[in-house]
Image: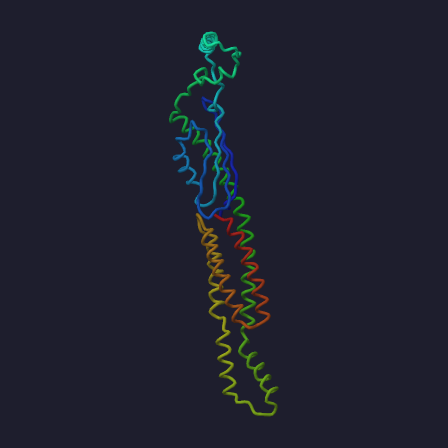
Length: 289
């Protein structure tokens, strides 16, 4: 089990300087990988995305790569050309009778006076260096996600035990439901009819109808099945977050149906506790890959 949240950093020395990589991940329904790269290595992005997919199957991943040696360098000024341009402006002023002084901004407007050192194309070796730094960052990110995943698993297992215990209490409460319902109904009828004899056959028919309408056996059986499946899923490899979230939705659905059908105050209170635990479990499950 892995969390979707983590951080990792990697770095490597190359012949054009140090390459630093930072990888951060957070919760997301799907896999969303975004790179921030120097323009000089933007052509590497498709292959770098494929590497990131080896480590993640869900989550929003933000990877920043900084290559100091690939940053734009200071421009080189063509002083000779600038001087020739100034002389040309002086002659033009004289011929046109312009008295305005030549200012530096007039010269700066001509882009041809400036040039940038051309960078050599990056080779396969450079790609391998960047890949190495990326894998280092992603491995550290993965280690943190595993560490956080263990914490989530421990919390979910504890809450699963609570859910099992509450479900057991609900089942136990229903064991004598029919008998208790018959006694309550008999007592109520006696109050209303005073000394009139009760038709036991009719009474049991009514009890059977009421018991059937409020029977929660199927719901508790399904609820226990979902809880057991939830526990089994912990042992699976790979991405399990969506499956856990689906099971928790089903558990919450069964709990809601039990609450609506039970017609019992104590069971309603137990359901409130159960649904509260399920909601906390869902919050945690949404952090799992």
